[in-house]
Image (tube, rainbow, N blue to C red):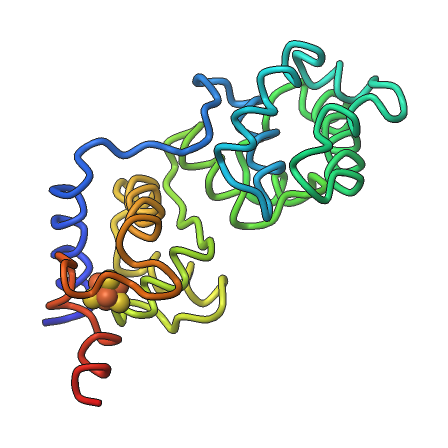
Length: 214
Ligand code: SF4
């Protein structure tokens, strides 16, 4: 079985396990909200970001409001997501750029997205995939770990994971694949004590094979 065939089989299994694939960040279809929430989600749970987002967007509804927010206002609103000082600084600067350089819209090109403070390839790929339907591998901690265990990628480095998976997962499948992998990482293939016995992907798993062979 080639890696592409293996990836196709895993994509099929994940579709059966999680027929609905969606992002855990509840942005309500708003590109701007998804952008802000993706920045806030660094080292924070989606559930916490979803909670914080309610008051945050009620107070600051768009990029201009973020860019013009008073010192301390944004910090107070996002205090509970952690790293709030640097996140606030990045969001304020990124929103200023969105207003001044991109007409108030979230840019579409990878190079433009990467100019926004606080946006790395992981967030950029999430935005390109979920907002613009352009695909993109979101190489977060779940994706890196699980695809490494399955032998689809090296299992350590985000850029290597993105590059390896981009070659074997069709563009149209990439975003939903990554959303499903996050759910799989939360309920089955956890970082510690993965539920290998009940795992529907175990026949493909290099990690399990090695563990079984001692
Ligand atoms: S067999 Fe275990 S390590 Fe492999 S994918 Fe399944 S849960 Fe993860």
